[in-house]
Length: 169
Image 1 (cartoon, rainbow, N blue to C red):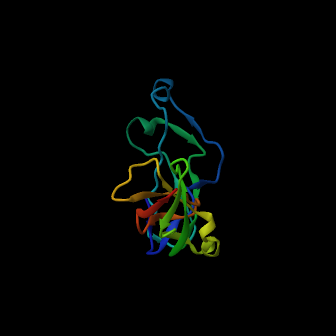
Image 2: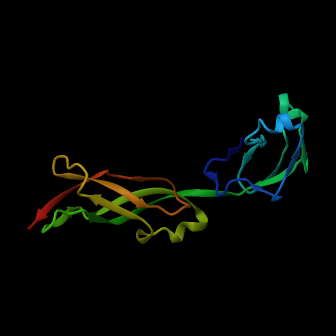
Image 3: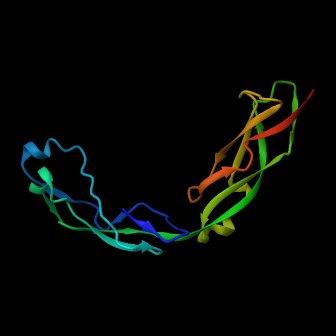
């Protein structure tokens, strides 16, 4: 459980300091455990990378288990995010055979939240937006879909979900 200062978000899952943990205990208890979910409450609001310790909860059947090492240090990488708007060329797909299409407009706006460290990388060519003509056409408008989003972008949304078009023979 973690709270982040406004504008800051994690850019990685918690990273443990060890690759392996041994858990010892009675066989009948160990057999009932498929996974062991460990949680840590992280005090304060995060605005940079923070280290924290994770332990086995001291409740119920888990309290009889021994974890070696008994505490694991983890790190959460946190970074300041900002919003960016990008105009992306729309790629029409599944156009009826023998036809050409003119999209009106031929670009769509995307808004996305990104870490400041990736700000300059966010350009139109790292996204892909398609207008799929095999999907239902409503009032001479085709639905848009974002098909390619970089891993570091969050909350990526189209400003308009549909685009008008003209089919040309």
